[in-house]
Length: 596
Image 1 (tube, rainbow, N blue to C red):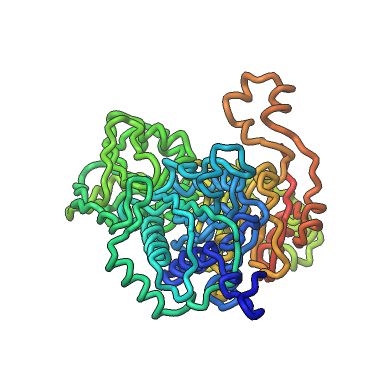
Image 2: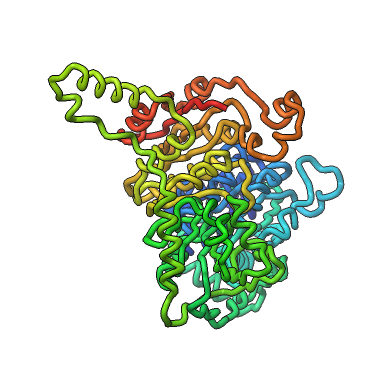
């Protein structure tokens, strides 16, 4: 520590440009509504980390510390999914930044807001063999809505009115706007690369929560005209407004179906209701409810009298779960109208009309068309609920009747779980105040086939439909949905390989509040999803087992114990129902053994 003349401590020795810059950036994000920061520890990012810790101490943000950056990225993704506001992800330089890429890709394709704050070495250390240094600027392009490689902070700011502070506040505001979708058609990830020189940390400046200093800094920036120009083709000035487009008019009388893919949401149900059209809603759409929803839609799309006679399909969200929907949207004799979303525009038939909005033209709907679909849907309904007990038989004084009823009841209680009854149990136990997160496993396809309509909030990473990050995402969903003391449980349904792929997400710091979450693992000992693909009919059995099925012998109970989760094993429907309907106070891992 340096001393000034006469033995006094030089106040400049307690400050650092890195800390003042981190404070300017993060304080502006918090002022603008960012409430969650997911942080992975590291040396180069220490200024950011210490500012975040102070903001948490003051009650301005909730901080979630994750050792693994991939877990951190997907946790932020889950927070953004549930809340609609981006979480900020803080990490150090080098491979740490690369570990965020899977979550960035999913956020881009699914339209989830996210702010990436990656610490970096200064530019003079790039490309010269310096430790933990790679070319981080542009690492996530073209999968971000905006990006900026910021200048290295080189001055301290004792009163919060420097041009450096003003520029960083401006950049933070622009980054948040871009993450929320301003200037583009959808929200998504934004990348701010933050190079720092030593000293990497100092005392937090006193002006962090000073509204006066913030106004002074913003006024100084406006007066100087020194707006930082970020990368990605979007400058530091105001982002362009979203282009206005008149709604596409949907005339009545055309044999129409509404297709709701992942993240379509309630808009799909409203459109189907307004148009008097059948609703083909994937289980991950958030639209599988209402009077127009079609049960067993896959078989009905194959029916020449129903799917074969479709003239128009209006698509919301990102359909990914069935070949029948893909076949429908690839037909050249079907007019496909797709509402624009994140990622690549849908155009499977080469003639799809992409629109920003649709409007149903008033007129008489085709009741015959809708009625045919609704009758077929009723006939295709699957009831997987356990049979009600034979009350009269159980109370009968006739030994044969009573014993028969008892035997039937015991048989129902002892019946082993299979995939349809597993997904049905989770679905029936969940209500609008709960959250259901579905992994990209075989179980989500079973759920899509057999589950009926119910207005339950559903999340799934179907932007790229990878198996990675499912538990992390669900933890983010739980954090955001329960942040204000809201009731409800987040239930995660996934297969064993998807579970093992994200097992690091089970590690939570002991000083963070436990979310109410149930991770339900359908364990069939490997990747049985491949059993339903063409490869199963052509591959050698040993090769299939070795490189696709990928069997394992992991003891999930020991994993739960090691990570501090409550563990349960359910082999019957009655046992699973009891677990799913009992009060949940923290983290539960429920293993359900399944036959291959």
